[in-house]
Length: 278
Ligand SMILES: O=C(O)CCC(=O)C(=O)O
Ligand SMILES: [Fe+2]
Image (cartoon, rainbow, N blue to C red; front, side, top):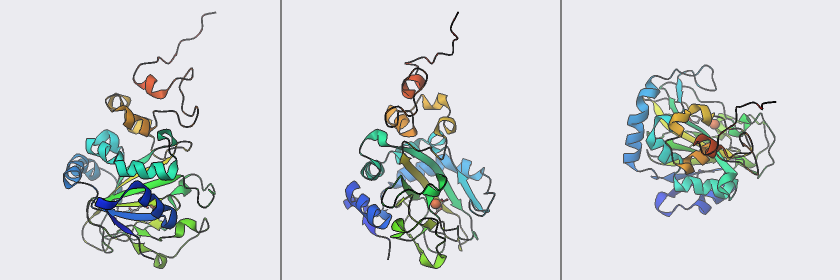
């Protein structure tokens, strides 16, 4: 079964969410404006060049993974808040803005000659907790910063595998490449079996992996340290809330005497470090 493509002009959050519920993945073609991607690329390129390659086969011995995109790139701040991405998160992960949060931000640069990554589910990051089939806890995007082709390592997906049993080791032959042009985006759930493709071209494949998870789970990239507080204080409140400076559910993430983390970050509530005089 081929991954479904939806043109940006007709894509809406509910129809993409419906494809995610059915197939676990969908491509929205030509969603990011070229000038936004150009700005992103210029901002992030020096960091990618300075990033070490992975230390094992899963992260990729010739693959660079560059994070902290919120701190490093104003353009990334726009991309993580893309209305369609947030709309899909709302439809899949819960209707309240506090139902989900940013999980990680990462440029994945698969170097020429890299072998394919092991096929996996991203939600295994939650210590392999066996989430029930049909209960998605994670929505992912990977934006194509270069064209994604079978030859250069387009993400390989198994549409429909979001409803498979857990802890399988599917064969690479079961996967198909999510080919797409620069500016298109692959949406996929944490329950989809997938993996980075082998890069048999002579150029690096660049993707921007921006992922979201339910607010009651731990974030894979630590947003409070990845973006230093002095930078965080300059960001808009909706973005800060998305990064986790908000209370998930009733009280998750409160500070001190039940204060809202955003109030503490912005100095509207002091966190007492004083001791009581006795
Ligand atoms: O780079 C890709 O296409 C996918 C990478 C991936 O699935 C991962 O690192 O979890
Ligand atoms: Fe993955």
